[in-house]
Length: 124
Ligand SMILES: [Zn+2]
Image (cartoon, rainbow, N blue to C red; front, side, top):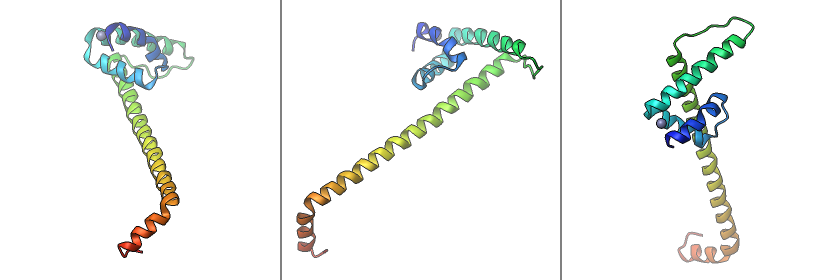
């Protein structure tokens, strides 16, 4: 992702509407690009303060905006890692299922031949 692409992701990042791929690319860019990180820090701080003002009850307001943004980015990176692991597990489950199905179909189709081979080897 380049700086122009990152600029377009600031508001969606704050709104939490970026897809996994975009979010990952954006976080990676912001981690390594100081101007884009400052840009995010500015918008993030404004939104954080506006959200605080908007609340009726006085919650805990942190003035350490860098820390708040860092925590938010870490939370998002952690969520991305978990989703990536779950996606990998899902893909593996699909692959295992396909292999088992293909094996079963081959066994049904060629069971006579397999039986003959196993008998020939003295395994059946
Ligand atoms: Zn940049």
